[in-house]
Length: 109
Image (cartoon, rainbow, N blue to C red):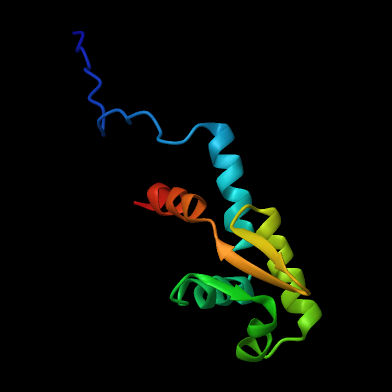
């Protein structure tokens, strides 16, 4: 006596992924940058400003970190494309790159 067994899938097939492998690699690098608590605090402080721009000198006291450490974190975020910078005399002002944050927001929603 032969019985035929039908294979019933447990789940519907997955839809295509939203991210390409290349996009996933780029976004993972940015998330690694943001994995440092001080960098998240810096981003939050800059975002909280009315024009979303701040002089690097203003970020030292709120974080309680040394100026070289704050500068290092800002440099890492700038190189990751999260911040823009503009020199004004001897001061450097940092501004959030909204397009980059929007991309992170979109991938998480």
